[in-house]
Image 1 (cartoon, one colour):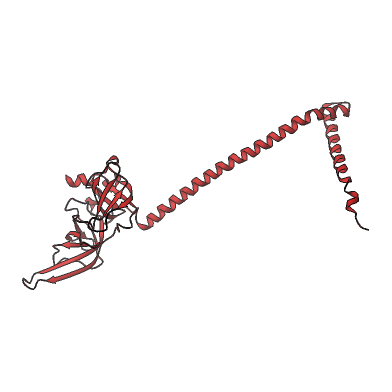
Image 2: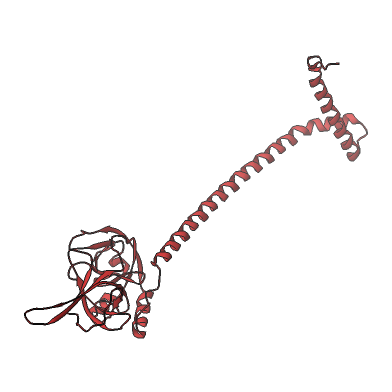
Length: 289
């Protein structure tokens, strides 16, 4: 026996109509019993009159729920974007921490130097590198802070614990920083291992190394030694990392027999790769005083 779908296809709408009528009669019977009506006709008439209003109210409720869901979705999306921005910022700070950009400035200084550096650190300001000077004799950085932010000429610029240079020109919203390997930027240094003064370091132009001036031949210097500022010249605070000794050489003058020594230091702060620095505000006025 086979089922003929075409034969019963016309009965489907009739079945739906009968089902709807039965539901309507059941609802009318219930309302009649609850309202105390004596006739199903009266209850059905009341239901037929109030049905459009109820349908409209149901549609409005559905629209309101949908609109509320859209608004909630937009709020959740905005909150998600904000959280993603915070996560990106935290990841960037984590990277900077790994690179040593946010290390404390005070690492190897003496007690008095640590106190002075901590005081300068409290007044320091962050700056972004927005430009770089010529890679020749005037190696400099352009940063996005200036006199408006309390930066003055001579202020020390650092990247974490590493010395970068000092402010040479301070404009209203920007400043020019002369790096360690720039011309006319000497500094007084000492070794961390021996705690012995090594004299002054100057730029070994046209390269990017620093070399000592008038280094004593009996000075305790080895390759790999960490070199920091001594603060004796009052140009830079003491205790800031300058770099490491990469080469040490002794020579004898054949005419006089005098022995001389020269050490070359590679700066710890690579000025070409810097994107963010800190300016120790007031350190230039300190040195000037």
